[in-house]
Image 1 (tube, helix red, strand yellow):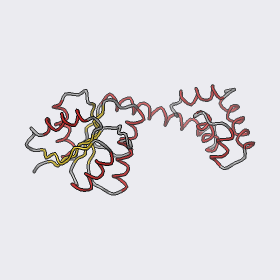
Image 2 (cartoon, rainbow, N blue to C red):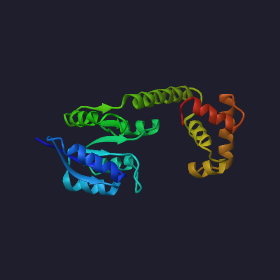
Image 3 (cartoon, rainbow, N blue to C red):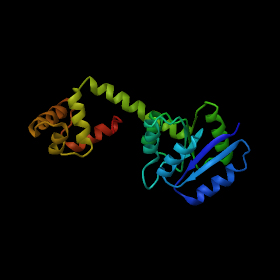
Image 4 (cartoon, rainbow, N blue to C red):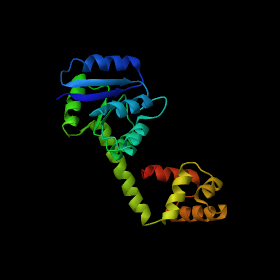
Length: 212
């Protein structure tokens, strides 16, 4: 039985290369080539493929946003991310979204074919270097969060993360729907508990603990 496949990538030359590569595989049926996330969504709706191979970056929306749309619609397609590069946050998000395959475009073409067959058969295929870095960051973040939970209250942790993202007290108050004076009290208590004296030190602390 042929593996029904849709490929989505924002680069026309790359799509052409994928078409030439996959057309030589007798067990793969290439149903559609898509240059935008919206085209990919429509193709999955129409063809109901077994697999969707896509890049992360499209002009109309990100590949990760597309995957969320597919999950929300209950479309059962398995997804392989094939990208030039993935940062830690993108890799972590692919894991959260249940992506079955992650492969870098720098890998040999034979590995893509192997990945397709492996994922179609129910397995997973993850690019080890990116995954290793992402897991390390996840572990640092979880360890930092556990330590903070013994020092700060939930609200103080929330305020700390917002401060570390560059938000002013007024912006934080607006987002949390509290008074600006309340935010100032929280920030003062956070400084005292963590032994920092300003917003720069607090931001550095959050980065060191892997919280951002």
